[in-house]
Image (tube, rainbow, N blue to C red; front, side, top):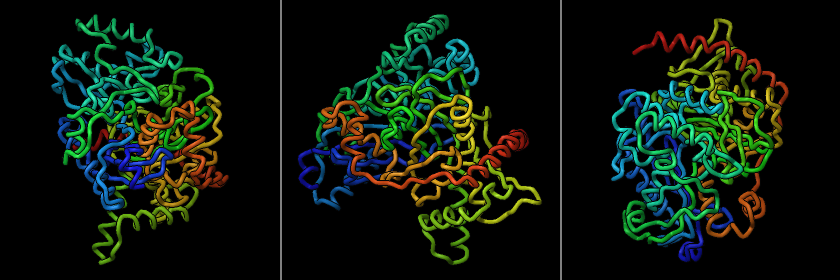
Length: 529
């Protein structure tokens, strides 16, 4: 491995997640050689969920430094180059720069739901669902709100496209990430031209002298040349100055695209679920949906295949808060228990709970939830006097509710639209505890669920694979061929079949979840502090 690293026959992937920036170094077969990470958190500033862009730069350097130290500790060498590298991040949102690359407005993340007017208007105009978090909705909302900065906009980026631009100087974006900015034509592998013209007409009506293609990044697909690491980019990435410029960089992708790649879910009838701060499930389609559904996003794979997404803004934040509370209790009682032990014990114990969670209900709504059409959030736990209030049921309902909103979107796809699903893959940190979340997901979608041994590596591994595909994988043909024939041919994992009793229990939970939304709305109205 030392020789591969020295020769640069490796691929580096870095993904900016909601709470952690992670770096993974792989060989061209996808084997993980080293990793690094940096913890961070978004902030609610003047009603806007955001990250300071200075923290983005600092987090990138810290994450890369962590990876470099891991390489040095394991192999006794300092990496100077890679075969390719790639950047991924949370999709959607709004980073606006002027012609001198000066930031014009606060970075609006996917978590913001302050774009209802724009999203509704664009959905009606396009006859295509434009979710609240999409970049087009953010830009148009800023226009509708009369914000002065819009006249000076020269670039609109997602976080991944922005960091790629800083590292390479290229204003480009992977098609999967682009599909969270604006609707994509999967035949032409580009923004939908008819919708672009309609959007440009809105910009002209607002008195703006630019069109969408002037300010949005150019769309690329997996394997395309997306530029090389500049000297300035190398300096930004590696504070020691060891890393050399000139490294090929793959198209920047969003966490949906890297999730599909990391689970080999890039072909029709395959699906995956990424469980984290936000949780989303995707199924690659054989045909377009029969009608517009405001609960469902239409996106693409990194190669451009159409894909239906059920995306929930809220996933594991409240679950993590409860586990942290149990950690405080352990300290109070003088019990030594690290985070891994707490999660493992509590998650495993949840499997002894009742199939319907004993009548408990919870909503981990830290922010608004698009699938249930709620614009604000209040974390909420409820029970009746007759509920079976046990630790197992308490943990189980928090695991269930982390998929609650996603389940509603998946029901639309599987039950209403009749979408075919042959294989569901799970990935992300929530799947670290063996089998537990697999059983929960299998019950939610009533389908077999697989989790690979690499599941906890998540999207950082996915973007590393996309970089490896650029560096050495295109000789296998399409991305799905490279994944099938080279990467996943050796990987093993567990498959869990749905338990009929658990499926029935999740259906009962789902009906209660739908009914309890009124309580969530009441909590938002009442808890105005």
